[in-house]
Every structure is written in C-alpha cells, then in structure tokens.
Picture 1 (cartoon, one colour):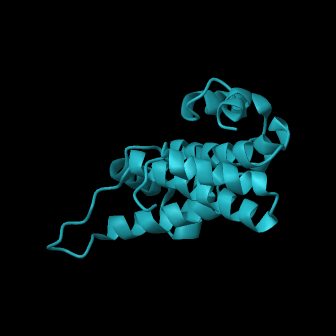
Picture 2 (tube, one colour):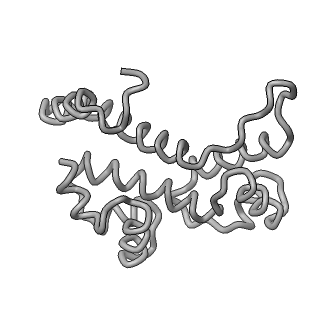
Length: 166
C-alpha cells in the first residue's frame, strides 16, 4: 500500500476494519498509521528544499532537521522560541528566519499543523471529548483549538471533522 494517496479507499477500509475488530493491537497500528499519514501530508505541504546532488547538504538543512525533530518530539508542550533555540543551539531570531526560509512556514504555523494533525488522529481513533483532545495536543484553550482547527484542519470544526471521518 506504499504510495497510496491519503484518500485511498483500500487504506480507509483497512482502518475501519481494524477499528471495528475490537483488537487493541490492531487499534494501535491503525492509530499509528493514521498519525504517520497525517504527518506525511503535512510534510509534503511544506517541503524543505532538497539538497543538490553535487553537495551533501548545507548546515542550514542539517539545522532544519534538528529543529523539526525537536518540534515533532515536543509539539504538545508549551513551547517558546527561546527554549526551542536553546535546545538546538541557535539564536532565536536565526532559528525563525532559517525555518521560514527553508519551509515557507513560521515555527508557530508548523507547530499548529503538528498539533492539528495529532488532534485529527485522536478525533478519528478515540471517543475522547474535544476539550480533552485539545488539551492533549498542546492547546491552552478550546477557542485557540477551534481557531487553529478551522485554519489548518480542513474542516470548520473538530466535531464536524470527527463525524466526516468516522
């Protein structure tokens, strides 16, 4: 199923089958596959430039990998640019400029997209209350979650997203 699109009906059918099985192991695999698919879609929307084959990659690209790895591990936490910069050994202003130049996104847009992708996975795979999903994904308030979801979630609301994808 490698290379299957996000809307591949075979993949969706397999997830539904896994969900309906009641098997916790299959539920976990389904959730991981959905989460990976959402992360891959987000990364494909904001791809960093590919290094030229003639050179192994510049230091900015290496730094970008460090930044995105850190953000992927910590996106549910209350992040501050100074903390992110300290964790990857960069000046905060340089980090923000490098990230924007390489991805076309601000650090905050990237974090919001990671949080929304995680929320979408939880909305599909769990029956958790929307407020619990929002808090688990790193949002401080329900209103900020709804605002971000409307902008980056592809649906007017988390509840509507859940109904459409179940």
